[in-house]
Length: 447
Image 1 (cartoon, one colour):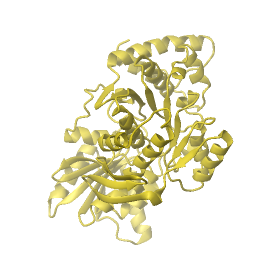
Image 2 (cartoon, rainbow, N blue to C red):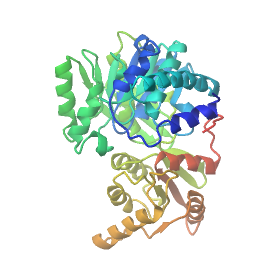
Image 3 (cartoon, helix red, strand yellow):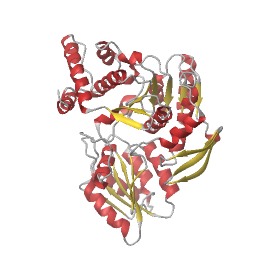
């Protein structure tokens, strides 16, 4: 198969099939390849928000030492090739179209045999996970930073046996159809990546999640290291970066923008401390990794005049963290938003949070069948204004496209007084913003 044929295949194979969380099908698929994942070392990351940033910090810490660090990214922002990559030194290498086509061809043969035996059909995500394991084994990765997809316990990535460390980023309400109706229930799903006697590093948790993780660690005999917010001292934070102290580490620097990145960086530090016996690293390794980490789509500045910031804040918890930085960095400026979210998110709560943060809001429909129609999101803002009696944004307008919304918003940013434009919501929307402003991913990608 060519790369294009491979991409068409993995989408067509799942047509009409529902997502059924579980490890049975993934396990049978990997058996056809003699379980390459069992020959790899993993840092396994689950959580609701912050997985990508935390993974970027961890990867940079070890790649900076000269280790070959594989990374499975979910979801990708620019291209499906972005999902499977490795870093070594300052270089990041993405899976090639030829490599991906080759792995999917091999996986297709295995799936044909599975179907003939009545062993089920893998989902798109299970196929991508299998391709990632094959690539990481062929690349002889020293370490793999593996992001879980939707959950943890029943996620395809959880086929791995014993991670070097299980990392849990902040748990919040999302994917409730599959994971549960409370933070505690969702935390139990995320805690499913915790394995016997493997160390665990966790972000600060709310809503009963911390108790769930502590119980899981007791049951599995694991040492739990949690980010201590009392030991964080932010020295300086601006759109140019952040300087902070954490425990014995003084004057750490982050180039990644966003106040929220500090806790993600501290979680990466806790992970590095937890695996130090197997993967030693110095304070300089940590310092260099945090400073050099790159993660697109999170409080990323696409334009300087006027200032345009893009962020994949796609659920209420992520939006709240994004708004912390909006308000911290741009206290006095007028703020204009272009917003688009998926219909299966709690868009009413997101609208409530965003209503008071921006002077004008333009809503758009993300380019996906899951996208919430722009007029429905705009109506949600108007309903809030009517029922609350508060001022809210000056105007809320639904636009036919992202291009139209950005065009109108840019005019608003220049007159009568300058303003900052924020484009946020689903990652598919954020990718469109990069295209509009001509910001390259560096992938030379084919979708």
